[in-house]
Each structure stands twice: as C-alpha cells, then as structure tokens.
Image 1 (cartoon, helix red, strand yellow):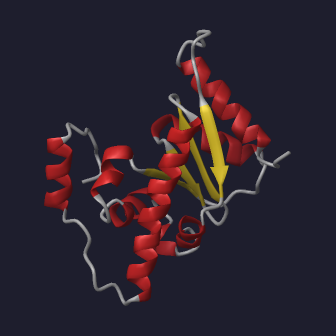
Image 2: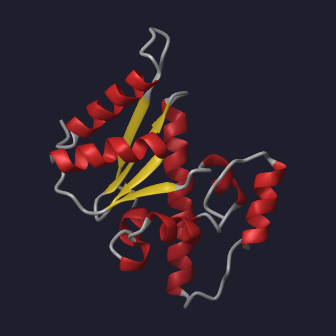
Length: 162
C-alpha cells in the first residue's frame, strides 16, 4: 500500500461529499511520478501554480481544453503527511491535476479512470515540451496568449490563466 493512501482516500471522500454522495457517483484518483513534470517541480521558477501553467499550457492546444483550470502546484511536503493530505484535497477541489513538488502528481476524474490518466498524459506531454525547450536554450515560444484565448473562445472554454 502506498504511503499516500491518506491523500487518496481523503480526495475520494471530499469529492463524494461535494457531489452529494449519491449511489451513482463515480470518482477515480490516480497518483503517478511522471518524469518531466516531477523534474520541473525541482526548478524554482516552476514552483508556483501561475508560472507553471503559463509555461506548460502553451505547448499544445489540447492542454487548455482538457485542463482549463490548469495544473495545481503544491510545495514539498513529506509523503503521507497530514499536511500533504490537506493541501492535496484543497488543490484537487480547484484542479483536476495537482503536481506535488519533488514527488509526482495526483489526477482525478468523475467520468473514468482513463480520463484521469489522460489528464496526467496531457500534463506530462506539456512538461516534456518544456524540458525539450529548456534543453535547447528556450528558442521556442509555444502558443501565444492570443492563440490560447482564440482556442478557448472557439471551444467555449472558461479559464482564468491567460
């Protein structure tokens, strides 16, 4: 059993309580250690939710469509601690994916396990582009703010990042 079981269980409980806990409710939680996201969480300039999202959501149009509230960021906490559990529950009320500094991610979905996994994949792919850009001296700009806003307008995406 994972040392973060308390976080997994607390997120399930919190989400089911928020939805009224009816018998038909479904909720999936995935915890993973995607390499590029976890690596970026070690770099100070990405250790902020706003900075993280403005860097990651610029790489592919699908990311803002699938993660319109962005990726939450949590500063380092000891795995399995009450502090990590409490911060994680609060962050997953607002975000569908949360990056735990120097550790990994947790994603949730009220549709399917596959949807939660897809969210991790979108976030990790964006992080991979960001790492590639860093390794090449940051020559690429990614999507502009205007382009991201146009995508959001075309797909009726409500977001507060750009």
